[in-house]
Length: 339
Image (cartoon, rainbow, N blue to C red; front, side, top):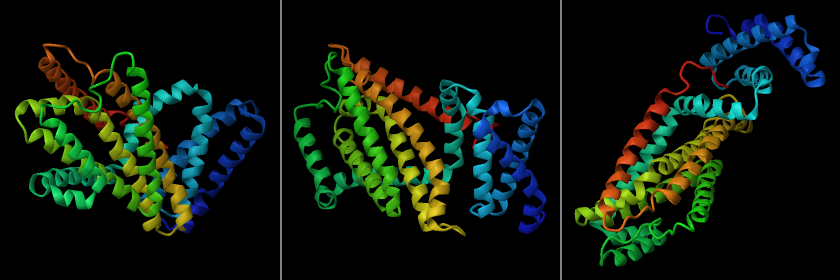
């Protein structure tokens, strides 16, 4: 499609696309056994050709009707050739080991945008608490009330953070509650993309401001407060906050389809882009489950008389976890085609 016009490209490739459609139709009606060995091999060849055609179409017309059609054709063929042959557990492992990190890299610009909004919001919350706490109250009264309550408790020493009072007996229940709450927040950030991204941006900014404001309460005090804060937030926060950024990115993908639909109708652009956004949310749910387990079982660990050592170990755990996440999202799944 890069070297020839759109019409010529369609004419030259249409017979192969129709052949693929016919084979898929037979499989849907009569199953894989309806194809002989030669036809199965032919389907594999047609799939690779369609994937190559899709790459050309994306390069020439990312949001065009031909690209949309080929994306569906390749996805349907892929599901027949690979997904139906494998077990659900194998599909899950493939998603975790390759598809999810590859998808995040393919949406790196929108993920970076979400991360910058969150970081700037956190910085703003920290700055407001440092220079003008009253302005924080006018901007987000509910968050300001939470921060004021925490500030009162800090006068007598480092107050226990959200996970600090969890007993061993209640850890599983609390972990479940945390998981459900975080999934709810992330789902809202994703679904709010339908408001042209305004709801997603609001949720991302308010959560960032609150994190920055709470961070100031601890980091502006003696060093033991800062250590306690990092040990109480980072073990689960490394994954949890990243997941929130990803869910907001998924929401912004929906918003982008509505704001800039290209040559497609808005509803078609939304359908086209929602597939990637929904797959990101699959990964977000998995991340939040892991974060909830850490927040319920690791973050609350207390050892009488040696808590400072335990806190340093928690911070070290967070650093290692953050490094592994960087490696995972940077390298996992490279060199594999994902639809």
